[in-house]
Amino acid sequence: MDATDKPQLVEHIHHTLTLTVNDVKWVPCSARFALLGCHARGTGALQVYALNHGKLEIMCETEKQQGFKCGTFGASSLEERHFATGDYEGRLAVWNLEHVDLPVFSVKAHNGFINAIDGCGGLGVGFGAPEIVTGGRDG
Image (cartoon, rainbow, N blue to C red; front, side, top):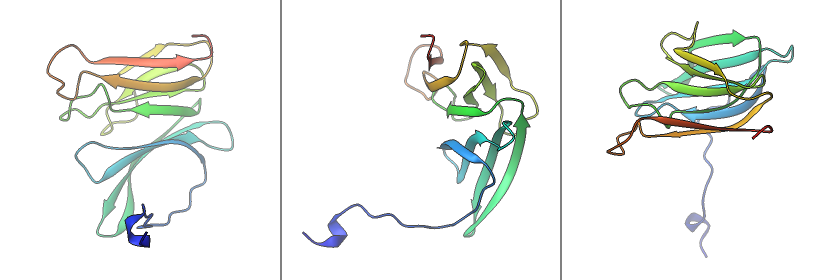
């Protein structure tokens, strides 16, 4: 088997961060990605980066009281591109990545960490309302 037949990893950009990264998601239909994590002091980080002519530019960022664990664009339309997140306190929040000061929607979903999150319906599956599912230790 030739080495070119195997999956290959290509590093485009190397960037040092000062936080623990828990999740990264590409913003649909763009050259941007959202990064979720936690600073050493325990606060949460939501950052949006853009790839621009071989360079990485931070588009926006916010720091919150609790660390972010997971995120999804699964329940968002391609036009809105709202980002649903789960944090260490059990809060589900939906963010407009153009204005990350306050979430569009927020609710206490679990008693502890939200370990996993996914969504469906908003990406043009043809029917049904957008739905978000979360998983935590409490069920």
